[in-house]
Length: 237
Ligand SMILES: O=C(O)c1ccccc1N[C@@H]1O[C@H](COP(=O)(O)O)[C@@H](O)[C@H]1O
Image (cartoon, rainbow, N blue to C red; front, top):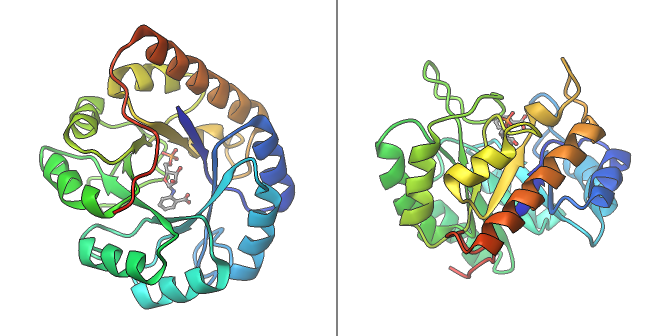
């Protein structure tokens, strides 16, 4: 079971979370115009602090594929995570990014809202190394960092419908990650708000540790029980 934690904005926190054993450590990267969005220079320092124990994920909220490509070329992160709406960055854009950066692992956030989410995931899966299924706000369509769960039965159907490894996101933390793994059988899990300090965006290392340990424990239990779990390995597109 892969564990992923957002968002890390300083090297010391990146080092501490890597020492806990978290597999993917993420930060928002861009021109610095969004809240807590790191410039390439700041992201480079966090990525170096992650070290060899974990993989750094660069989350781009922008829909400007040329700007994203320029940031990738400057930073060369192991995992590029695309967070813009699916209408804004589509499968063709993902194919183009992979062609330009062949060694890159691409993670694609997708909203899980209604029945249409399953077809959307099926359409994107062939172009992603990881899908990340996240909650969506009904009013404005905002995806992610909402701190709320979604219909896990839909996410389970997506896990069963695609070959691509799926990470489950949306309101996960130490107290519900095991139940989420039992319900969805993802290849990995992601957490932001519920591993933050209360009322702030800094990471609470005790929450991160409890989330990570609960996820690894439940992932191992599911694997040992022989229950179906998606493959956590990456596959080339
Ligand atoms: O991390 C952010 O600030 C962010 C901003 C805008 C969209 C997505 C964002 N983050 C992603 O959302 C998941 C889930 O968040 P939560 O656990 O429900 O709070 C987060 O881990 C990032 O992958």
